[in-house]
Structure formats: C-alpha cells, structure tokens
Image (cartoon, rainbow, N blue to C red; front, side, top):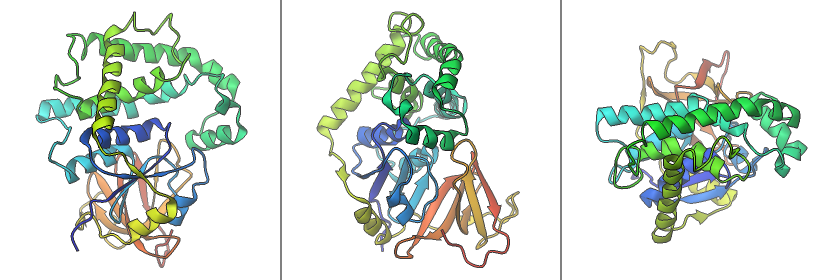
Length: 334
C-alpha cells in the first residue's frame, strides 16, 4: 500500500499554535480535513485515538500522528517538498530556526498570552481558567494576570522594536526578502498577528502602528496573503471525530520506519515501552507506546487506539519532550 498523504488537523479556531499549521497548509494550498475540538478538556475525539497529549494542534498524515507545531511544520516541508516555504540556504535556514526558537522557546508567546484583555469573558469562566492553569502550571486568576501585565507589555514592546529595527528595517515585504510569505514569516508573525486581533491587548501608548509601522504593515500584509490564498485554494473539509478515527485507522502509514539509534545517550532500545510528555506545558498528560523510532531530533512510538484497538504511530520532537522507560511494562497501551 502506498504511503498516505491524507491530512487531518485537530484544532480549535482561536488556537494561535494551530494557526501556524493552518496558515502553512493554506498558503501551500495543500488539501486537508479538520476535526474541530473544544478549547478546553475533555476532547473525546482524541481520547478515542488513545492520545493523552492535551495540546492543540495535532496532525495526522495517514496513520501517523504528530505532536508539536515545530515537528509538524518540519514534516509538512518534508512530505510535500514541491513549493515548500522553507529557506533555501543554510544562512537563511538559520534565521528561520532562530525565529522559531525566539517565538516558541524564547518567551514571546508566553508573554503574549499575558496580554489577553482582562475583560474577555473566557477569563471569567471557571472551566477555562482551571483548564489553562492545568496546561501552563501558573495562575490565571484576574489579579495575577493584571500583576503580570506590565512586564509582559515591556517584553512584547521590545519584540516589536527588534523586528522594526532589524529584519524589517529596510522596508522589505517579507522576512527573508522573498516574493511571498515564507516559513520564516510564519515562525515570526503568529504571536503578533494573534495580539493584533484582540482589541485592547496592546496599549496604544506603548505599542501601535505609529510607533512600529513596519511591523504592523507586515502583519497586515500577511493577513492579506492569507485571504488571497483562501479565495483561490480549496477549503478544508470539516469532519467529526468518528470519521477522523475511521480515516486514520484505515489508512496506510505515511512514513517508513525511522529506526532506533543504538548509540543514543538515553540508552533506550527498539521495542521498549516508553512514556513521554512535553516539558514546557501540559506535562501532566503523558502518553505511552512501544519505541520504534529514535534519532537526535525525533521519537516515534507505536500505540493502540482506545476505540478499535488499531495500531497508530505517534511522532514527537526530542527537544522539549521527556522520554523514559516504563518499568515492568508488559504491553504498551494508551
């Protein structure tokens, strides 16, 4: 059976991380299905697949399931190389990767999330607040959010200033001087785009189009490019969880076996039962499976769906995840 290329994106509409993937697929005009999820737990569609991971988005390609937008975008570049948005030279790839590190690992989005307007109804919804405290491991009560806001404003203003005075300083349209948005633009723009869509998130006396005209124009240009791509591309098909489960478990695997590096510093071996989870958020929600792939950048496990008991493969990046052996495990199951 030929490797599958059928994509399902599990997400909810206002997830800033999910937008990174949806934007990529839209700009590339790659067909995909979407399975919409609630913004808070529980997510029964993911439970049916046997997944404990609680972060959004999740992407499946065939019977392979991918966690973390950093790995997902890399896989889409690899699986669909014709027209890829990634940089073409080592130097520019370095800029691209550094922008990813800056916005994800460097605290830009963490600070952006502290600028959610305090008057938004969801911050007064006990279920949302409890869910986000479980996700992030920090308080989401209004008093604590208000206390953190001044520092967040300072850090986000510094981020705007950095882009205004460096990568966008010469008036270029796109980060890498490309003719259209590239992966580097996606890696950089998402927190700023997200903030600009929330009224009162940014105090105009500190952060405004007047103070940072190039950054605001870049965000608007990106929005325009997305709108144009949506008009000319194929709209995603929305499917429910039952259809997604059937589609995924009935597909072939999208990737060949990765293999397990016998010299990996972890000492883990092929076929070993392991447990894995993200370190920066959602770390209370852990998955298990049988190790079938291990490289310096990726972990692959085989696990079973909760509904139907079908074998799927889960892929996670090495960076930002912990993997440990399951002591005394007889059979891997989720």
